[in-house]
Image (tube, rainbow, N blue to C red; front, side):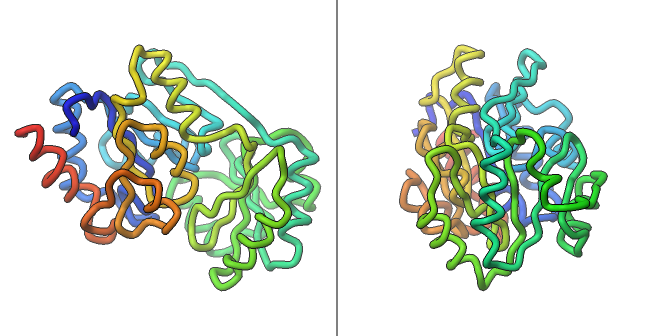
Length: 274
């Protein structure tokens, strides 16, 4: 099954680690084994490239072969040490998302360069920025969020409101941007053309690799297109139902039980004879 694999690419939160946790030692050794045997390794995340680099650095991995950041609006090609930017949200689209979210209590969050801009500096924002050692600013008004194009706008919400929020985003779907639930309490809006799959395909084109040579891991909606595009798409046992439906394989264990490493050790490496 994995005889053609040249690249393994993984989502972070809910896939390789429980959100805000460190990478288990077993997982670090699995990454090392991949690279020692000539297989590229990369991260595809809703976080920006700067945050992904910081997180990977805390794992002892300072030279990722590829980073897909901001759900595909950024790409770092580690082979050529180059960064690319793709589809953005226009200011008027960002403004519309505030109207969509108006009926629900929410805290808007946006990457503002390498700084996190938020509506309120609450506990969740504090925890997130401390996890990546990021700076933050509090917006003076809602309008601060839609002064210029941006890769995406995120809204922290109550978990009990998420079903209603998902229904509303489907009812008010835009031809220009899409909504993705990326955590139980996080709804994100992004250019409809941006995706982890798009950036992954660009990386493959730049490096003479085919998507069929990629094994991709994820756990929720913003991973779906990447898992579908890859030669083999793997969803975590803890993944959302929509992601499980499109995946080629579902892991035996969830992220809380180090399910990614378990899969690598007992399925991927076992087939390879490593």
